[in-house]
Image 1 (cartoon, rainbow, N blue to C red):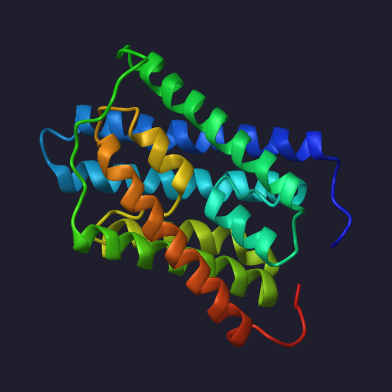
Image 2: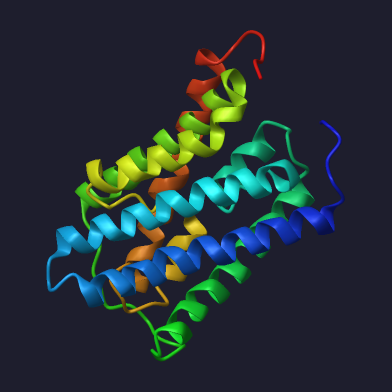
Length: 225
């Protein structure tokens, strides 16, 4: 396991990153819905652009500190590959969820909405679950492959992948268990009904670990900068 910054610095990075990522996903969804004039396509496009942009910024800024996971699926895969201690992984996921929820609440406060709310937006069915499995599979494969062969391209690769996956997956690519939980606490454009969270998270974890298994076959050989 390579030398890493002290845990408190890494947790601070994961917390700050999750706060801004989740605030961006939910806040841009609220703004988009307010301005799109009822067009869901325009609202989704605005939500997509904001999410892709903030991902590039956050991974570029925080990646050298914590890896900029901001996603329990990424953290669990890293732990399974012995790139992160189990105790550190648990702390990462706690920071991601706690500060991510704070980011969701901050978005509500900024747009003068009730801070505490639950989503009533249904997102369920086989098509949605397959979409989440594929979205998370692709995200993990993108991260592992780019880290192995073009590490300086990770921020752009992840941002571009999520931008594309918002549109080619039926679920609009949550691809993140913590943000799925946080989005259940926002009755906004980006929301998901709490009852629909468990199958989404299950599909995400299946996709993540299938990608990790495939990466062991695909991405072998020397690591490139």
